[in-house]
Length: 182
Image 1 (tube, one colour):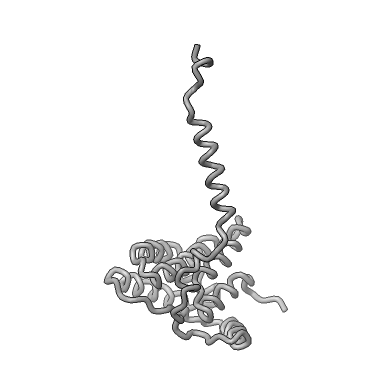
Image 2 (image 1 turned 90 degrees about the vertical axis):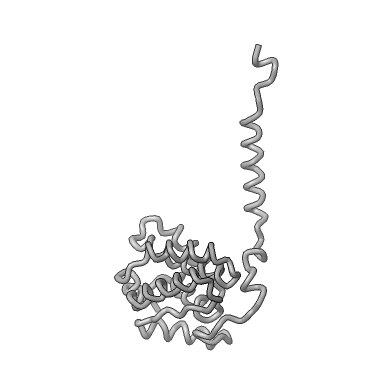
C-alpha cells in the first residue's frame, strides 16, 4: 500500500511517540534527508531532526544544547509545511514556543506529543506501537539506552576517519626538510 508520507517520516513519528528514542528519530530522518537533496521539504526535515535532537538533549539535562536545537527548529518549521505532513502546524509551533520557555527556565524534561490531524497517519503509528508492545504518547521510560544512546553506537568509522584526517593535516603542516630549503 502506498502512503502519502515518506516511510522515514512515519518511522520518525513512531519513534517519537511510541519508543521515545529521539536519537533514533534523528538517525532515521537524517538518513532520509541526506538522500533527498532536491526535496522541497528539506528545511522541514532538518527542523524535525532538530526537534528530536532537542528532546534528546533536554532529557539528558543539556539545556544549552536543547535550547539551541529548539530555536533552530522554530526558525525552520512553518505551520504550512507541518500541515502538509499531517500535523497541526500552528499547534506544533506553539509547542515549540512553550518548550523554548521551559528550556530557558531550566524546567525538567517532559515528552512532546505532536498534534497529528491526519487520522490515518496516527492510526498507523498507534497500530505499529500496539504490535510492537509500546504505548503511543506515553511518557519516556528512564532507561540508559535512551538517555545515553549516542554513547552506545559503533563510532569506529567516525573515529578512523577523524584519525586519518588528522594524520593528513599533520603531514601537510610539517616544515620543509632541510635539504629542500637549500
